[in-house]
Structures are given as C-alpha cells and as structure tokens.
Length: 499
Image (cartoon, rainbow, N blue to C red; front, side, top):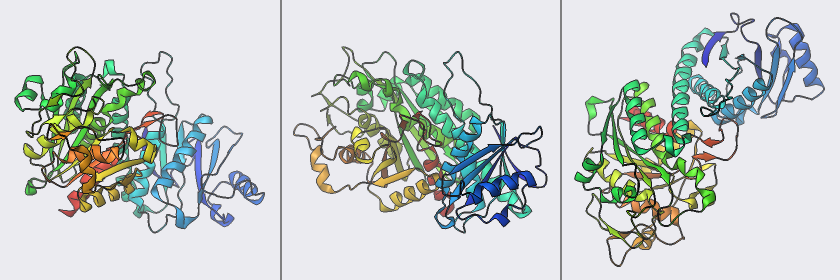
C-alpha cells in the first residue's frame, strides 16, 4: 500500500474516501474547509447529535455523485487532553475498516490539531503503522483469496513546515509496519512450512534484504559449542536444529555497547513426552513468535540505520516425540557448564534460551540482553492477551523497555523477581531444575533464564498472551500479532540516542 503526505489544496478529488476527525464538542466553524454539500451534511449530523466526536464514534455517509470523494467518514477523537498515540492507531484502524465496508480504494485523512504531548513525526508513524497492520491478512494458502481494495492512504497537511516531520514519521511507521507483518507471517506459517531450517533461511533472507549479517550454525557446530540444553529439546525431531546469529553494528565508535536480543524459536511444540492436550496443539506453530519478533526488529533496526550495535540470536528447533526424546527426570548439561534436572519436557523454551542467552553474553559480548518468548501459560492467566510480562534484574533496562513499549503501544508489566522465588528452582540432584511449582511460574521461568546471563543487565519478555489473538481487534488481526518488533526497535533506537 502507498502511504503519502499531501497538501490540502493539492488533494481535491484525489481519494474516493475522506476520514475527517473531530474532537468531542464540535465547533462547526472549524469545518469551513469542506465543500458546501459535505459541510451541510456534517452540520446536520452534529446538530441532531448523531455525531458528537466521542472517542471511537464513527459516522459514515455516501455522496451520490460521480466525482471524488464519494464516501465521508466522521471519526470521534474524544477529548483533546486524553488523546494519545495508541488511541490514534485504534481510531485509524476503526475508520479504515469502515472505509473497507464502503469499498474504498484511496483514503484521505484530514488534519486536526494535535495535543502538545504528541509530535507530528510520532503521529505520522502511528498512522502508517496502523494503516498497514489493519490492512493485513494471511491468506496465502486460500485458493479463493481476494486482494484488499484499499490501495493508498493520504495524510493531508495544511502548513508546509509540517511536511518534513510527517514524511519522516510515514517512512519510519511504514517500515515498522512492514516488519511487524514479517513477524506475523513467520508466526502464522504452519509448522510443515516453518521448520528450524526454513526459519534460519528466512533470517538470512531478511539480512540480505535489509543489510545485517547472518550466521547459521548446524547441528554439529551447535554441539561443538556445548549447547546440550538446546540440543536436548530438539533431539526427537527429524528436522534438525539451527542456531541463528544476526549482527548489526550501527555504532562503530562504541563497540563495547551491544544490545542482545534473544528470541525463542520453537517452530512447533508438542510438549514432548509431557504432551500437550490436542486442543492446544494447532497454535503451537506460534511458539517461535519470539524469534519472529527478533528477526523483524533486526530488519527494522538495520533498514532505518539505527546508530546502535545489536546482536540477535535464535535457537530454532522442534519439541517433538520419538524414541530419541529427552525425558522427565533426565539431567542434561548446558553451554554454561551448569547441570539441569528436567522436571517437565513442556518447559522446553527456557532450555533453549539458557544456551542462547549464555552464547550472546559470552561469545557476542553483549552488554545488555533481552529475551522474548512465548514461555508460560501462566503469563496469559495473569495478564491476559493485552499485556506482556517482564521479569528483569535491571531497573534501568526495565525502564527503557517500558518507555519503548509506550511508543509502540504494546503494553508491558513488570513482575517481581525476589530472591525467594529462586528457591523454587533448586534441585537436589543438579545445579538447577527447569521448572518449579505452579506458583509464580512466569517469574521462575524467567529467573531460570537469568541464571545463564552472567549477571549482565537482563530482561525477559513473556509474550505467551500477546503473541496470538483469537479474534480481530482494531489493528490487531486474528492469529499471530507480531508483538515485540516495534518495542525492540524503539529500545535499540533509544539506546543509540543516549550513547
């Protein structure tokens, strides 16, 4: 889709559909820029209080004529002092869906006065993101798929001094939207079309297209690194594991500062011998959503030339069942040299992440590390599908993630990580066990990973609830959401700005 910035005077007849936003408590004198016939209809709807500008309210009507615009959508912004970027994304999504019902091919979004708290560049970025993500569909395997009728989206400006900021925001938002879609596509692929090998190839393809280096290690190379924890998870599958390292160095002057991003890459999770219920299986193709987020974020960071050093790591494998499967009660090793008592083979993600974060710290010398993973059902129970859980040993890093999430609109919430929780992971026969009790299981899963970070500033994002949607909601589409791409991008961008 083409997203453009156009001048009000140059845009007459450009689009078949206009979205005209209004704050609550509409001043009819502010709509004098509209054509007489449209102004009359809007005035009528306001006077009879069919449209009040309340947040999220939409009122659409068609104009019976040959020339454009043919469709008008009034969109309620609510109260000016309550408007934020996420409300803009959601409202834009609602208006786009309404325009699609009207068969719109080209949309023109009219300008309105932004609150002082919202910069033009951020507004344009949010609109571009929302536009692309709302228009998304995953239908590549449907024989009767239909392309969206929507072809272009125009953001209208009045003052010429706003053009540069608007264009900057559109470029950034378009790229972030595109790579969130990349993560959605990777997550939505069925497991027979997204094996560890294919996931590694997709990372390589992204690196070539977007300008970052990718190294892929095969099974023997993984074994040479001593990653027994990772290899144990994948040893039952006929699809061999792959270890993917993505490197981007945008700040050659400060090579000591490297942000590490580690994504869980279980391309299908049967639960292993602790097998999952049949009803839970179909969604388990999405157990690599963390890896998808890291690949998408690395693509955006590189494409937009962020002046930071970032290394992304993915340990990709399948957790399958066979005579070669690892078992509850097994004691396995790890790259860090720690022994692990396997209590539950369905607590597999943390085993792969243990070797992956240790590799990032010890071999890639990252100064801070963030892992992102569909790790625990308990995160879904605790926070639902709207909020990602954070477990961290660093107030500073956690604060940076929270700020990045506020820019992306992806909600996060920090959970406690007191020393007492670590007691639940103590093993009588090994250095650590891979699962505690049901109590605080999101926290203990994160703390298991922390024990392999070498005391580096670390944060764990549990996206078990936010990486998958059971239904459409504004610009979030059913199935894979691509969560994490934009937050990780903003985290890297902010680190570049403070160095």
